[in-house]
Amino acid sequence: MTGRWNEIVKQYRMRQGFSQTQLAKIMKVSQRTISRWERGEDCPGLTQQRRLRDLGIRPPDAFLRSLTASVIHCPAPRALSLTPRLRLVAFSKPALAKRPSIVHWVGKDLVEIACGVLEEMLDDHDLQRAISNMEIAGVVTTTRSVLRTGDPDAEGTFRTTISYFFHEGTLFSDAISAPASPDESCGYVPFPCEEILSEPVEPAVSSALDACSR
Image (tube, rainbow, N blue to C red; front, side):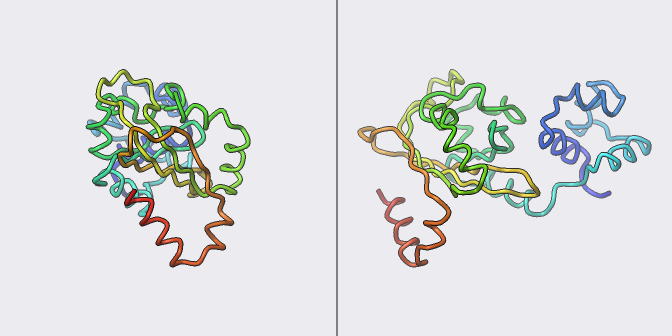
């Protein structure tokens, strides 16, 4: 097995929804040991590496590494999460500048602090079912505040495009935001997969460019 063990262990734990304590019990080590592995201060011994292989743990694949890098280096506020509980995987520097406390939520479920339009979306069972069934490709939202983090500079009106996709059986959401007029009404509009598949390429590109320019 190749790759950096801190990335391998943390990625596996986050995908499975385990806490460090839960993974420590499975591995028969202390929570502190898991924490040291994830911080890169130590790595599993040969016996522990075999145990990790038995659990099916492997290095993050090229796709997720590339996507995470794309999110981190995005020039706009952007976040990658595991759906449906919005477990935060990665975020861009503008997202951190917009909401500094987000750094403490990596590996945690943002659903716990959702508010406003985001909370409405999570409570919309028909929408969530359609997303899980991949009937909905994404959602465009207009929001002012969607997370209760207490950041004083987190206010403002934003238009966010959220794209949903499955990778290796796991549903991800990729959200990227841009400032919007403060006069716009808050809300969300889903766009079904069938509309995207049936729309010619040129009009689709034109619509996307028009939306970005507004």
